[in-house]
Length: 352
Ligand code: CP3
Image 1 (tube, helix red, strand yellow):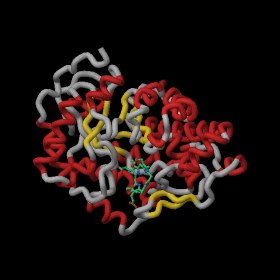
Image 2 (cartoon, helix red, strand yellow):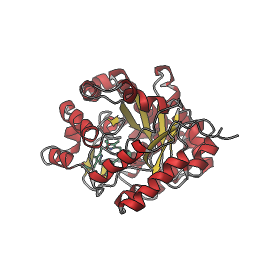
Image 3 (cartoon, protein in one colour):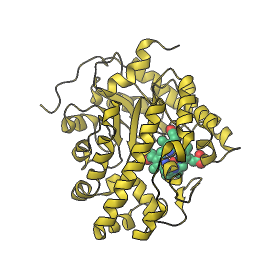
């Protein structure tokens, strides 16, 4: 049984309320670096795990047991709702999602059907329901953001430049808008189903949105992302918005209407807080710092905590756990964040 405090710590921090200490969890904490996950993966593919509630729930719990983090993240993938909406795809180990017929024109859009989680992907809600029966910390639901999902669909797989995606955005704005609205609706439906099943916070990973300049983001992505967050407002569940390489986009991301901004490691948290006003932040240790010797890592963890300022900060990495990270290092980071003094300190009025 959890203490009442631990149960609510993450949610209180997401709401910007005072906390006894800064909560901590790690993006991509489930899977990736855990030996017990790799053990499960020797028998089942990633998508099989996602579609089998007992397995998805088990992998969701693994990092909570081993690392003592203050939140669990549902084990799934951002492309699971796409596969359930009629897109033929595979998740290739070490590569990522690969789409057999990428979306290149108007006609391809027909392959993206409406998404009704209860009908098309009942295993998502079932995994949430199973996981929360054994959790003493909140479960975070998640979905891919519209730009990132569009990029996989248009490129056909991972891309460093997202050039084809940006080209479609610039040259076929109507098709682009239709696609992004539909992706926002798919993500919203998935998140609503996760919350209905018991997720107590949600995070939108628009991981690759930092590929855009601010004007393009404002014109071509922000409306769909705002639609996504607006459609979840009635749930009252804290909504986190995360992307990488968004130094130039932070204020625009905030304008999309989430309750918390996930900050990647390119921006210092104190400057992010100044730019975001009272909005709570999550982040932002460089994931590669977890591969450094402990004294170096500790210094960087402290710098993130000090810049985060205590209240209104959830400690996390600036992007996902790297697969080669030793799990004991993550555990040590959790312990260190817990011991950090000054978490109750109310930060200087930000943006003043
Ligand atoms: O904590 C967790 O890891 C929870 C589950 C989770 C997965 N994917 C499972 C997964 C989450 C939160 C995701 C999100 C996700 N998936 C994102 C957004 C976060 C980010 O990293 O930016 C993106 C862009 C994807 C797409 C994706 N899926 C890629 C690029 C890859 C390959 C590279 C890799 O290792 O991340 C995947 C495969 C994938 N999804 C794995 C896992 C555990 C790893 C491979 C495997 O087990 O076969």
